[in-house]
Image (cartoon, rainbow, N blue to C red; front, top):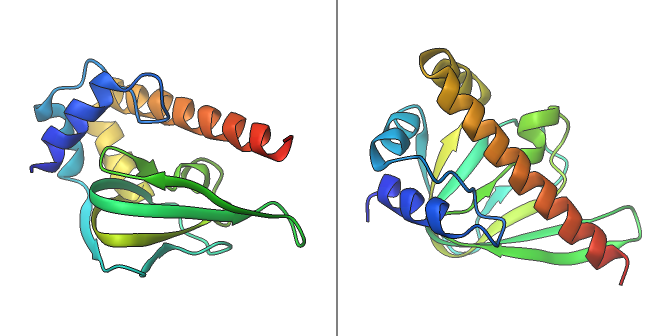
Length: 156
């Protein structure tokens, strides 16, 4: 299925989870954003993001499934944080703060992604500043929900 269609469907319907929620985005808007992204294919078991690496790219999951694992410190293993499916985004924390990755992400089955690096996002923002602002607020919402979920898990 077309990645733009996947995201348009997921991002207008799933307000109750940490899926990117952009209800006014059409398939055409997603296609314009994704024109700036690079396709990435990963096999089962391949690492997409490695904890501690420096990279500010954001990834959009278009097919397959990923597992996110992390530790909160040297001796505090949080294990599996989530499973991400088509319509999900990963890499949002490092996109915002430019610091090393806080989690590792690997494919649990063959997965297709679109990788949007910071320079490509900047280009999109120059072309469509209002849409870029909507995207950033949507990513901020995803980040906030994930941090709240992680905090709740840590407090159990």
